Length: 304
Image (cartoon, rainbow, N blue to C red; front, side):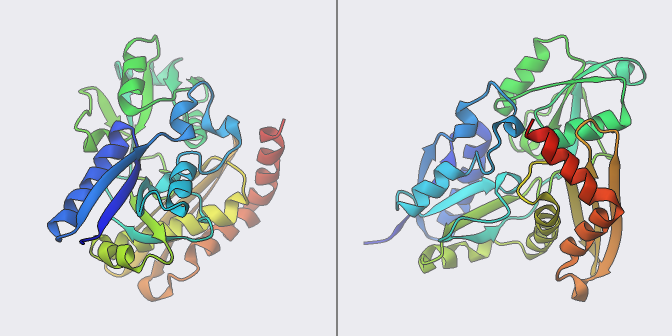
């Protein structure tokens, strides 16, 4: 009997799009598949910002449990939601080619930028970077799936809200009034889909190898190494983006205070042969330039 690869996914529209994309590719390769949607704690609890819950992996832990209890064979994630340390028994099987990594501003007109305004986002990173650039503005929380957030913006008195470009583009629902935030450094691995499986599942591991995009995997690893070295288990406003061109990796990273007043950035290049450990090197440069003290301040504020 032919093995059926059971694909675990969150049941949001975007997550289902991502999982169906994986399903389609696997079936084109001759595999039999079955989609198994589950509801994560992050999708159920919408009344407070994610960072206020004090939980890492809130969008992934339900799928981790499903994997480890043999209810699914693989799980498809937005890589930026995945903790930098995977649970015991679960391994990265493939990193798919990156979509647009940028953040975009969906707005009702840009007249407010140089005056007072209200911006909506549930992200500490987006909030801090926005306030760093526009200190006169107010930032309000925004949770829910992509369509829910767009509707909340439409029905509110807010001036704008910040979204990941990849999510809106994948669902083909980019509104007419938007601008790409070229200056905003995205979350580590933003726009990247990651597929995990059990470390003992050699069949699924082999089946997923053709889906792995080497360049994206390298860039995402550098970004996540940077995050891991800085974070120390604490949620913080951290951005990172890496790109490879002509065997040169370019990296930009940033750590900000929660209110956006302080920002410590790094902008470096490295040859393709010297990439190993580069994310950690960039993080240590930030830590030595005041980042260590800033992280301590953030941890104190987050625990108050």
